[in-house]
Length: 466
Image (cartoon, rainbow, N blue to C red):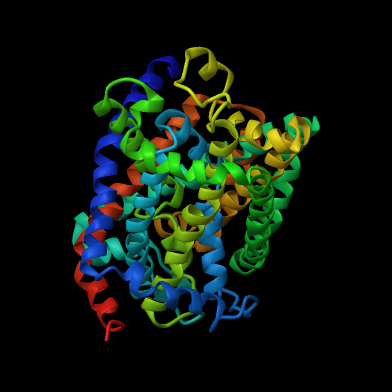
């Protein structure tokens, strides 16, 4: 069965992501950039103040909500995953250094999209008498479309989210952790799985408050660790950094010089890789991070909208860019292994995963480079599991927890932990493709609702213009 379905799912994903979703998500970003009068520029400084000024890092949140910073940390934990290492490297390997330029462009417009998602998440959430907050795309989808159509779109989104993030997404993340730990430290995958399940179970059982307390500490730590490692490489290769930036801009518009082939084909490859990888790295428009922002204990939707924009900025313009700089400066500059046009032999030796390990190994040494990347991937994948589990749980309660939210949560958590354990033991390209498919399908109802609720978002953003 897998042999039959795998090529069909892969082809469906290729068509969906390369054409429909890229067009749809870029369209949403452009639309909200214009409609909000470039909110990502106007309110960027305000977003910084809302995160690091008015809001304290360790504000005490209520048991069933998060501080604004904790909501941002939970969102960033989902955004800054293995895709920042593997995704960026894959884009560079396939689309050349110029793909990073298009990632920047996509992230710029994505900041307007995620502003819309976060403001709508706060605007349409339901706060019950006991303090429980119900929020996320399913609530603004049913606000945009009343009746059976709205319920269908919300249900479709909820099912796709549970499967893509809560179950199969967590499975492939735990597989990444187990593989890295085995490669770097020789730890058996089953042992990694058991430890991971125990840690995750303790956090999941503790609810939103415990998860928030964990991610607000893990996210700054993992970001700092990776940034410091990247800065060491950049300092060691400082003489190549001007050339590196030059290559990013040059090959964004003349990629055939390094990719080979015709100008049109090379440009399409660079642009599509940058757009596709960028969109699914920062997750703007996918409908994942609004679950976290809906839980923020803020009253003004605009405040959390500006905070959410910082998530895309950190994901792409800081972490992803640093990763790209070290890969390009160590492997693509003059005289290095990828400085000339690709050959099949090179492509067989270097893939999107060990591209980063090779880059770090040029300065850290092969052994320590592999260990450093493994530790970073552990933090990235682990934090992603925590956030994705929360997002999936919110949708499981929406679908099945109307009479007994606690029972729905217990069953969902048990199944999710089973997938985490399973992911540490097996690796399947088919599971990865299924995860991508449901991830892709999340976008469609979310993007439709974003377009439909333009007036609400614009009204909120206008209050802050004058």
